[in-house]
Length: 221
Image (cartoon, rainbow, N blue to C red; front, side):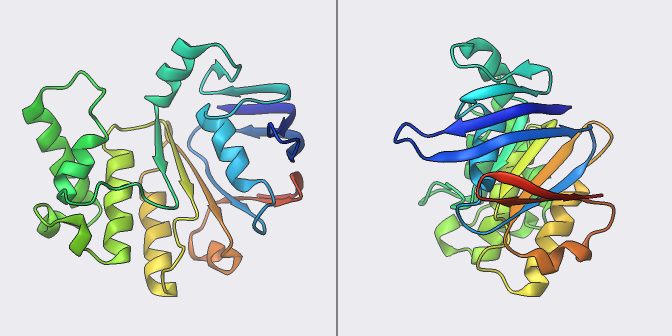
């Protein structure tokens, strides 16, 4: 579960990114967070990951309170989160399989098991035929799928995807959204930020949050 009570966030330069956020997200929910650039979507994800910390209010993610200085608890939390970054953060010059394995490098898993898990994750996203391909040679959509495989290979309880449909045509964008939804279950929550509000209807049974100027303006079931 994710719970925010009067959460605000201000960057060191004084920019107020989030204001009085009140939010409760049950396990197993698919949530879209929409809004223009600068509306606070990415800042919210940073707080949920424990990359940044609330300037005010209380935020709890998967039972862990997001408070600066609680390093061990935050590290344990991050092990339960699968992030899909907007810029992918893949290692050029490495294969798809190697990139997925890198997502498990801090886990206490034997090398053979990591390879098997990475192959399974790539198969799950439809890239079993690209396991040995260098990511430099993959299309934008294929690179996105590698990033998703890297995020889900650890079987996270929370998947956070920041603008995963950017630079994709409608068909591929819808396929990515449906793929992310396929990893949701009673224990795993998926949160997606996007500008593409017109695509939300492509995946049913979702929760929709709208951000504007750091404020949660609208929420729809």
